[in-house]
Amino acid sequence: MVPSTSISKIGTAFSLTFFLSAITLSPVFDPRIHGDADARGASVDFAVNVAARTPSWLLEAIVQAVPSLRDYPDPGSVAEVEAMIAEYHGVPAQRIMLVAGASEAFAMLPRLHPRQPLIIHPGFSEPDAIFGAAATHVVLDPPFDKPYAPQAADMVIIGNPTNPTGVVHDVSPLRAPGRMLVVDEAFLDVVGEQYSMIPAQLDDVLCLRSLTKTWGIAGLRIGYVAGDPVVLDRLRHQRAHWPVGTLQIAAAKAVFSHGVQQLPAIRHGIEQDRDSMQATLQAHGFKMESHSQAPFLLVQPPCEEPEQVRQELLRRGIALRRCDTFPGLDLNHWRLAVRPPEQVRLLLQAMQEIGALNTP
Image (tube, rainbow, N blue to C red; front, side):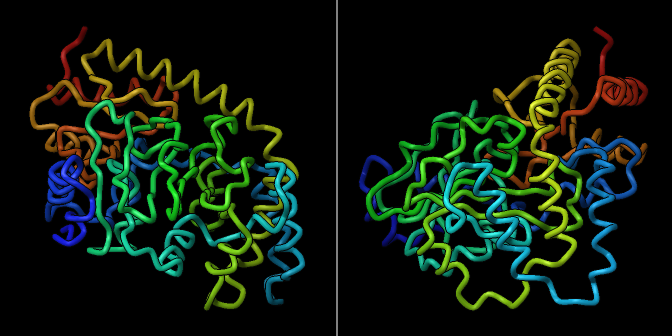
């Protein structure tokens, strides 16, 4: 809940909307619920936005690093990988910090001591898990493409593209004097680097990146933060020794020495599958809730009792992401990872078999 003192600072124009947005975070909202909870053991996974397979060259690089596990992680190797990432983005190496997944980066944000952190929703729930009741919220209306932030917020957190809507935003208008803008760019590598804030080298913008989703290594936990070197030093304060392990370092090095060259082809494949999947779903009565440019779609299925249908599909081995855990959404929404046409057909066939879908 937003403290009344915070609301009074925001001003009349924003107060009611901001307050109502905050109280929409019902007891159902649990920031620790993620898609993997339902995806484990599923034969067809639409719930988790992670590549279906880990590339063989990446697995090989990880396996080759296994004999080094006796030794502590090499700080020199961390610096080498950070330099590779910096070269990829065209920024100084001092502006890059390797982290144990974007989740560690979110966990560091309280070290910046924001007085009024604001989270724009629907969005990734990890910031809520970190800030808890200290955070305030703006909950956007469909199609979720007009983000804003009251002036009082001195830290604004937004996904770009946003999970679960897939919307890519122009986040520059969210900058303001005395404010830190935190942009979760976890999926931006497969959307297009032209939307990234990293090359601008802005002192008041932090960009969080994940290497686990595109490359199918969610179990390894690796990512990076890009931002002002002074801010990165504040994030490092009281950080544990060797926060990034040997296998994570090896994986990141492989991605930036070999994998990034494959990104154009990966983007093209995702675009093709997303366009095909969207057209097929719409032909069967699904409603697209947003204009997604990400490797997932936010939909309303054409059935009564979508949650009962989702649970029955899960019993049949098909996992979908429930959306009542995203502020602003409910059980009438599903988030579907973009998958090839044959898997989309399996979903539709299963829905027809249980009487949840009419043949077009």
